[in-house]
Length: 497
Picture 1 (spheres, rainbow, N blue to C red):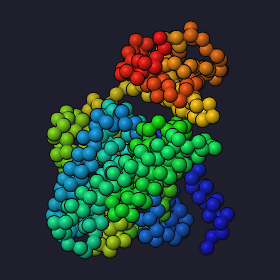
Picture 2: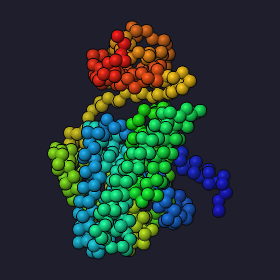
Picture 3: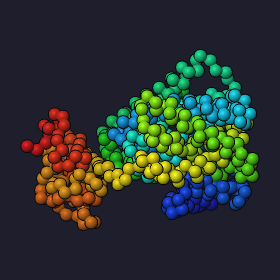
Picture 4: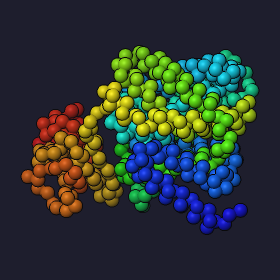
């Protein structure tokens, strides 16, 4: 067994290669996920000779990484952005999954001569879009908030029903009338557990005076991981509990919210690197050659029939334009999740599960090469891409517990309506004031006549009572300019006379 210093050195080198791969992937036009897989294959048995074939360990580590990836996705997703797409996202993660499983199963039963149970198992494994792939690729495409929100919600929520379907289909147990009720319970209970822990965690973090800023991100991540554990122990969906808890926490008024999100992004990236390198290490290139033909057959079925039909069925009640339906069909990205699902089937002892693992591995590589780089082009051709999308206002809060106050660090994004507004026109509520402005890396004390510019950073000091109204006022001016009206009685009562 290798010594500790060798193991730590190899892990550190792999992480550094993975970080550098992000920059290389942008230059080469390749998804970084493929580079991570390539690093794993390079380390593996066919190149550098590292022997690794422990399927149970790979599956367990894969699920652990998926928990962190879903945590990152939930913590960095803004509820205001995805709320208009909630119905579409839920439909894509449920109805679309069922239709995709049925279409893939029927096609593979006829084309590959699989028995019906195996065909449905293959369909279930291939039906889940990948959160890591969607979060890493989609946010750089620039589509409308409704489309982006629908795809993010789908990728965050569809893992839960698909995992249940894979476990049921991989086992030798027969289906009964209780099976649908069990699925409904696991999904509903998972969502409820996630919501309870999310709101409870947010309440506790707002009132906890932690001695160090870095403890807040750790606590937020721990709440999300606890949601997964609690969901699994309650025989519910731990993955759905994780995503819901992270979504609630990410949209709560947490102290150091910007730091929490930044830490979650870094941890999610680390989980992606580790997961894809691990899967590349587990893969056996000589065995993958036999999986090329069935993988291509399954890929054609998925792209040409299963995904478009499932999107049409799921979005029919919402009357989406055909261009948006076409983009949703092409944006069903696959990544590590189908490979982890295939490993679950292998651990459960499903027939031909090893062949399924190899086929899914090849299919993921092919689809990532085909869909990932072409997604921006498809969005432009379909007319769903948005150019020069302004970035949202960034507000990070730090509590001053002994003073009963908060400090808000505000960054004015490009395209914000705050540009050109005088500080006196902000009309912040009583108890709030802009105490410092950083412009072009130079800090100065502003006056009421100071006019804001894009990329300015503001330090706003506010009483704890006025903090929410202050943040709402800043966001209102950011979106609607200096003439933005106050809405609701609480803000109106709190503003300066």
